[in-house]
Length: 337
Image 1: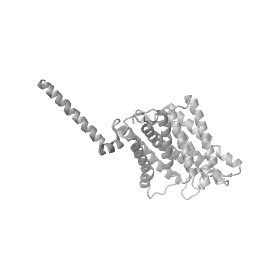
Image 2: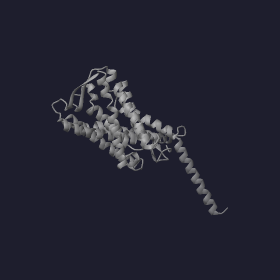
Image 3: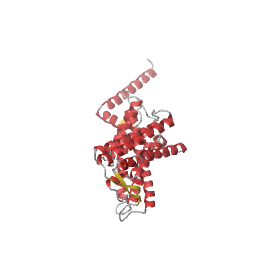
Image 4: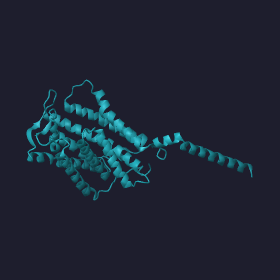
């Protein structure tokens, strides 16, 4: 054996020893903890921690930052709500940019923000679908004798409210902010990470998508702090609808349009939230509700049926748009977690 052969064998032995040490390190307690937190294959935190990080950032954006920025101010209800959700929208966008660049290393468009004519078309379609579907609720209550129309073009009551036209416009902007940041956070970021994390040898791509939609909808529902079983179910159905719209189109456009007009229609167009006597909120139609609470309350059967109408119209639009209801959710990391 030559001296060169001896050196080569020594180098191989040292290399194998180093590999053994690395494997032993990864197999120890420290390695197991690191493995729970970090995906070495993808070189980024595991899905659970990405989801939790985004969720905490969203809570800060909607509760902490607006409270600090608006402390001591006495704004009209419409302006206060719009300012709060503007801060939340900016926070959500900054979080998305940071996650895209430093965690996922992918373009922001992968979260469903590929702006363009077709994107705007889907926003418009979602808005029309939600406006039409939620329109079912008020006529049902009126025909059943559970509601009467007390006022049209109602500017709201209170010492600090704006004129109807101004407040109505501000609430329009407010709900646009809400739809943008909630869909970006709960669908674009959380649902995408959930699907990537749930894909495994035991769960197919389709199963991961379904489970991801359910998981993100549950997080979305809990994030709205539902105080009753009815509120929980109502929010959960909305979350499932928005999540399905996202994976069916691989875009946030349709869920943003749906989310925007569901909120706007319930609160300011058809006045369905007036069941809680929201006197300070501007409403195009202000009904007075007198029917059974299980039917006419905000999360009652009538509004729930209207949401199901929105869901049916959404399915029809997606079938017209795509020809089927298959998931089109694309992901650089799908199947790698």
